[in-house]
Length: 208
Image 1 (cartoon, rainbow, N blue to C red):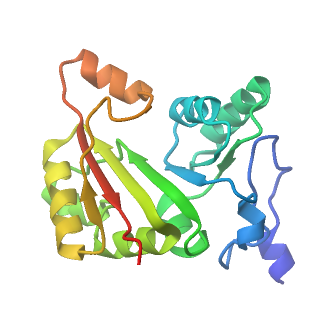
Image 2 (spheres, rainbow, N blue to C red; image 1 turned 60 degrees about the horizontal axis):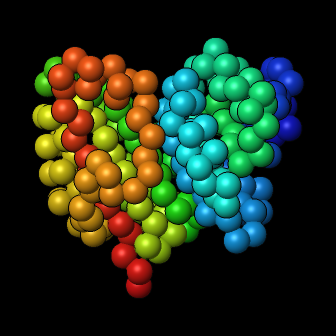
């Protein structure tokens, strides 16, 4: 029964990461290559950020998470055409991947860029950033690993700041736009062209 449940209804694409099992933690050997940091891009969209990071950091591996099949197909084609062997895409919902699939202490950096802010008060419970989510992010990060959150929605940024402070399991780091190489997503370029500001939150899992 487990084999049937775990089978894809289609053939995996070049550039796509398909775990051996969707109902247990991914084995570290399945997702990590010796000595290479792993970075996760939650909700990778059109893959522009994922691919620019992979091009710039040949010594790191990048895994984009995206739930929409059409987007996954497009990003996989881009990865294949670009010949990038350090970028892959996993088709699943972001919260599920972080909570149930990522091995503990396996991720160097986890990026959450411009997620849906769910601005209406009655929808705040749908926001990805909450204390339970932050705990699972902390579990997945290596000691010294970082969680990077960016949004154009100031109120959601303030919400995230409050959740991080209340959680208490991270060290807050400064993050200026030119602190390090960080390509802009298409959403970010669009919003900045409309005069909107980006709000950045950078946190680190302490080294015990």
